[in-house]
Length: 269
Length: 293
Picture 1: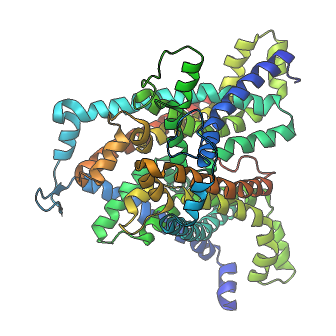
Picture 2: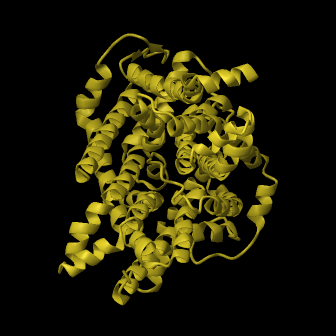
């Protein structure tokens, strides 16, 4: 159906307005990262790069960022192994209890982080486990599994199992089939799922809040603290700007890899 | 190794177990058992002096939840449900025209770009995006300056920030992509011929929307609403950063597990949120299943 001219303009105008709403705060963040003053007032007080310089020498912020990177790397790695294996089980086998397992893997992303957080906090309280980087990784992995699972399962559904059967029939060993036949077909789905898991873990606050030990200051926890101190707000804007600048190429990569799969973020199967 | 691989090839059950086992075990221990312990914690007591958890059964926490402090906790719960419902409806109203434009009006090349443009905000710090609303709505913020400069306001108003409206706007803003993406996916799947048929049979724009588009977009709408409602029900960050100090459920839970250190009661509050959301899930799943019966 060719959209009518009125429809084109009407919905176009609405889309522009909604996008303006989506991007106004982002513009504010980036603009005020270059604020000359400490106060976030309008009109804009003037440009400077002092907050980026301050950030470059702020060991606390950098330590927090590095901790977040490590937590995100571990959580992503665990989620990759667990989520991929689960996706293979769903794609290649029929077994009882598919629905409950599917529900259990999706639930941590549907329910708000605060519930996952306090549930695991109760768990660790009961088992007498000290809160640390490890407990945060457990929490993050739990909600990241579904991201890898969904991406890999979507791909496997489109790849015929006869591919790997042919490989076996031609005499390839199990590991050879996996390495040279199966892996190349799911590689981009793995990368996209991993990027998504990494991004979510890196920015996670609700689960982290309940599972971080006193010395586990992730970047979001550091930001939450810094936002309470008015003088540190411009530096926080600088942090967010740097993170965004690093993320943009990653988003583009993820979108490029998943260009045939449709929305990479849908967590419902 | 070779023998193991041969065994797995000959025994599909072993392969299935190996694939399924680790993830199921992980979710069982770190999610389902954790949720069970949350339930148990809500049925336990806490020593008043040492704050140690005492594994003795009690329904006190639930009694306090449903009738304690003049119904304070139920009021907080009701307020949060109401706010979550409002945020969900506003997000649906904002997301629909955008998703429709992306899925049905824009060219395929633009479609990909617009899709990316919806995703990009999700990749920048959610805390900082929430905080940006202080810069927009504050006394010396962008909104006030624009209103004063244009003569609409005599002097800056402090009515925009630190209240429920500010929290609502912020929630609408941060969760909007979670509504747009599933709605877009649903709208994109509607075949052109359905809309043409509706028009050929004499239906106007509104009738086509109500009788054809809305039912077909329903699963996407439900998925988006689930995300937005659930995220709002649990959030404690936006009320903390831009709110006026009136309590929401997420904040109440956070405080029990944080400063107040009253885990059993916090667990009871969390159970209330959990039961509400799981109920919401079943309700929406059922209605969307009926829609496709």
